[in-house]
Image 1 (cartoon, rainbow, N blue to C red):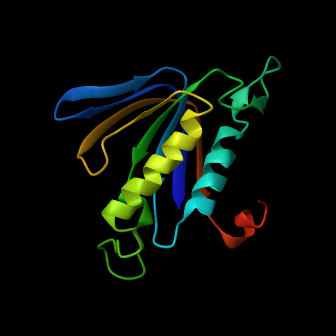
Image 2: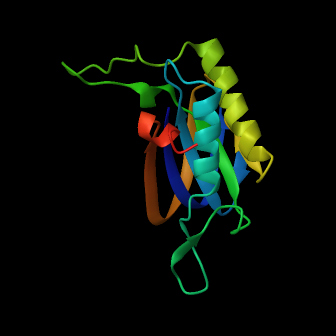
Length: 152
């Protein structure tokens, strides 16, 4: 599982020219589910993101998480995050989870976070136009590793 986390002032997603979700200050997540990802990885990543201290406190230090900031999340499924470039110039997406299972994992991920903060989403598998105003800019790339999961 790979997630690109961006701290945003605002973000939105359009499908077929129609805005389907828009958030104010919070996090834009680009979410890639890979083969082998399961509920343990999903829960770990949701917790990691919800507690990621990347918002400024009263002293302008990055000490607050999205919940403490009263922020929102826009979560966009992006299978291209599973791409590998071992050879050649064309990305290899063979590590991406099959769509039906990936959709279920993304839904679980979003539901876990939505229990804590407001979560808006794109449309799984759709061609989307994602708009964001990156605040900072702050961008963090999170990946599951066996080391990370031992922290559970």
